[in-house]
Length: 266
Image 1 (cartoon, helix red, strand yellow):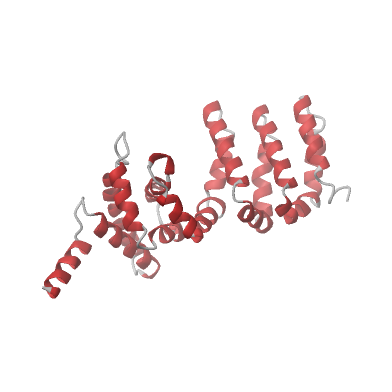
Image 2 (cartoon, rainbow, N blue to C red):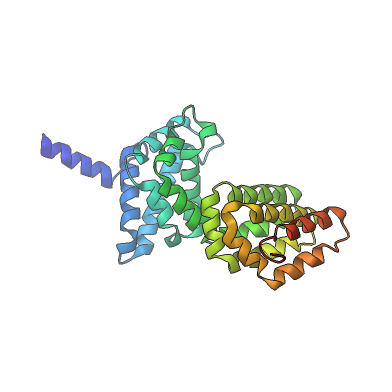
């Protein structure tokens, strides 16, 4: 019976059915773990994409309404593995379509507003390395930040507004991680952000300035403050904004200038 049970277990692992969350999650975890060692990673990515498609089906992600039961089933199996950490760790190996699938699955697992309990959030609290990896690899070290900055300047107000809100949440929620990123990737961030505070769009210019002031005044961002205020180009940019035709922009630029107390006039 033992051997028979083991054989059945292996068959379930390697040939999971559409309604077998345990086998699907186990196989997906295995595929992610093997990805960096595979002689043909493209083949592994194809397998990952196929498994994600089945998991999305169970979760109802391809339907109009999310399946709470399906999400809970996948979540419970994911909690037994390091799947979420591995998904985040190996994002750089995936194509854009598979990246979107990963984001959907991960988001559904931890989206507390659609669940009746907080186990998904508790899982993330107990596995903070997942949050750190996601934050660093998905947003900051990957191309997503540049895409987000591009969306902030989108001509459609709804898209622009949502992107601004997301950018603010990203740069103010996990302050320690943001401080580390700003200190280590200052040039990359400044190049992106200067396009916002000099944008032709008044709302973008104003809200980006307000967010910049918040970043400069954050106690954890002392390294960023020092780098920002020692950059002559930034001083020139803020001085130009002090002459903006909008009084609101002028005022925010003055506040940004004040925030340099440890720099330009320090």
